[in-house]
Length: 227
Image (cartoon, rainbow, N blue to C red; front, top):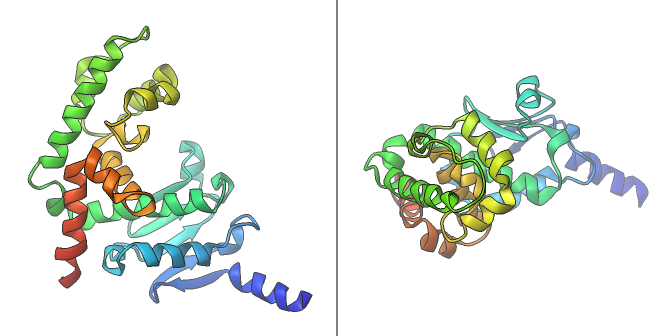
């Protein structure tokens, strides 16, 4: 029995295997012993339509220096999802991260379909200004208004939200505004957080909080399947 269990564990943590019959997953053995990466990916396949994985060719697991410096647990770049194993807390955390990065892959291959009509941008800026007005009433330093109108990621603004405002207060202020506090950091994270919420938790909540993101995800699910 022990040999059988060992063989199962070795298979689970194999160095290389295919996800969705085509996506190469490398260095699975680098993950903690309690992480079953194949089971995690199987569950994602059950939730996320296969055609939405088109932008991913591989998943690379390892202690990548560029991720360590920026303290990133997951990253999408050049058709690959990179995972820093030391930053993986548990299976749920890793599953959320992978789905989040799938969203970023879709931004690369369907930018016009997601952002072409400007509706997500408009929704995002309205929420950013709501956050700006909410922060005016708090006894903390208020960043210049122009930062709230900038849709691109800014290290300065992210640091302000994380350290000056703090995520507990940010979460309280953004309830019923953003599906997660991190979604307030940039337009891309706004979309990716909504995508993650849609598949990992509640599409109805996304429809309520971020209707334009909900509309675009439904469009991606239906219109892009035939491409």
